[in-house]
Length: 477
Image 1 (cartoon, rainbow, N blue to C red):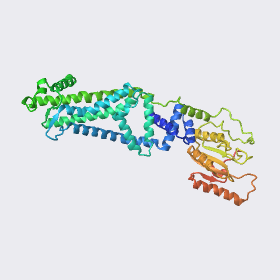
Image 2 (image 1 turned 90 degrees about the horizontal axis):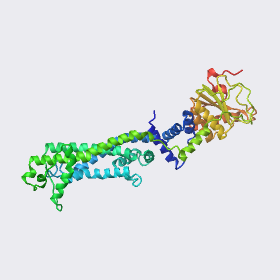
Image 3 (image 1 turned 135 degrees about the vertical axis):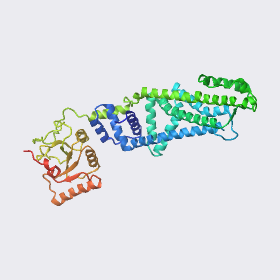
Image 4 (image 1 turned 45 degrees about the vertical axis):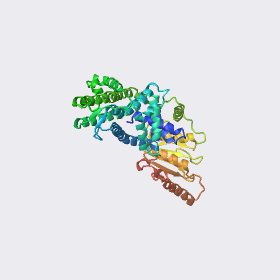
């Protein structure tokens, strides 16, 4: 079963692509109309067929493949950068750690991106681009670039997903899931590295300054220590903070242990916990609102699609073509043969004027479909019938003396897509004045054309009996 959110992204992406030019969607439109009964499902089905044709599905699969690896690379980059900026945590230099500088190095970027994310959440109208400053947005953009390359459709998919998320008021929460997850994993890794380093190496933790007053650091340590203190982390007292550098009170084991646990507590309280809680909240919001991730079917683009689907719905009564003789044979009309899954169907395309249809030799087991005279409406009715019924075998009668063109090729390809098999019956005109050689050349031209256009699966025959299965050649009395 297709994921509805994936289908919504593909549908919106197809809409964005068609803003620059309509796609050739005749076959997809008819297939969606025949397969589904409601407008939302028909729109999604059409977009799915077009998306597979232009490579959107492959892009999404590649995105899903690369996404976790890009996220893991982001975690590793943050951990490495944080530890490098903190300095000395992994054993470099003289193993002295300036706790305030280390704390700023580990939490600085985190705080800035968190403020940007909160601004985008609280002030989405005034700051519409705030979400783009988060790691989640960078992850999504970079993953799309890696998955799609320069010529892929990944940027269109990102735009489509962004529009859907914004419409459902989920953009900051969806971006936040990735951003908060990356930061949460990063802080877990940083804490693990710091705990390992502090547990098995000896470090000297203190603070130093050139222009700031010692009281500033005392007040800073006390303020930052209030949160960790609620969780049981110790806070250095005034004597420890104000002890001269190198003094016994500043370097004894108890003081160093207090500084280390205070630093760990600050990272837990001001780094790990906010990101973990916001990750849980973002996931909850996603589950609550993800049902709103649907295209806006009231938009003009989708209203035009609805009108096209309505035009494909056949009327209850179709008047017979007054320009052709009324058939007296027992063949069944299209409106009477509404059961899906016909075993055998025979249709006609651009036969000569005056040629009777259905043919008198039509077998009893076969269904006679209308004669498509070349008009857009008659072609549409023929293709609609094939899309609805999917015959096991469709025999299409064509005029042998005519010349196949691109329109014929397109019609045959679409009929072949909706049929188990398709065959051509090359019909000679009853009053034809052409000699046998010319007639044979015309038939050879059709067969060569089928090979040249890659339609080798369609067999061309000279009579209806040759086109029909052996057990279906019984003529109607």
